[in-house]
Length: 370
Ligand code: ATP
Image (cartoon, rainbow, N blue to C red):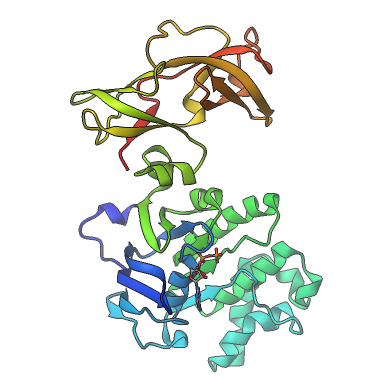
């Protein structure tokens, strides 16, 4: 599933040069995005980056100050929320506390004037979909957080919208439940064949669920890409740092040919990379390398003249699957290295205060010019 790579695929939701101002504050700045039908699309960014504002404009609770939003080719300006084939599930779930699960799910259908026999059928279908049949008569306060989340979900898909907007859908759940629910949401989206646009500040959530992620900052798009692309080929320092953990070395480009670049990152660290990106000779760039691509050992690598540096282990965190090391290089920089515990060498234990070498391969990291 990758319609964004298919030049013949028809865009489904289009933000075209959308700007939203509140007074003289610009929440969304001349932003353009394309979302395809049946895509699970995540808007990811820190608090205040404008992601909820984008959802609200798509739902029709707010209008852009300028620019257009199109759905299936139709300009949505002036179309009231209830006339849009879009439904929103709020983080707070906004369930009616005095109504049973069943009545909560039926509410919107009733308002739309659906016949009661059809409502009963649809509600039963929804209860089954979210596995809440035994809880139909309960009130929201008699449910767990995860069950309440599923009621909200059932209610928001009951009307069979074409697009479901989810604002921090898992924000109220604890970590374990959140992980399970992520997969449920993905299955549901597949089963129903809907387009999902989810807003989240949680990168793991976006990485797990989304087909593509738009990274936002200050009302602008920093990068749109699939989760592996975002992680392995971030377009900028901002994205590299925002998604996952990364080591960034400021460096000067000392050599550049078609496939390789050589960088000098401080007096003692020479870097050879097979991912030179846009590196230009003499330019100042950042070399970004993920902690799991760094080898850490008490033994020096074969060649210490390149992609290697010596320092001292000053922090170790054992996380079960992996161990994280912070190594302070002799020039004072701190390098993060993550080692998979099942691959850790028994004869090379490292503890606090040990001298250690960090090293990495030429394809371990990438050069960032932005
Ligand atoms: P969060 O994750 O905290 O919800 P967000 O990325 O969803 O953040 P938005 O709610 O879209 O952020 O808000 C973007 C910016 O616009 C924020 O700085 C916010 O204060 C501002 N903003 C949003 N709505 C209004 C409004 N009605 N009036 C004035 N400023 C607003």
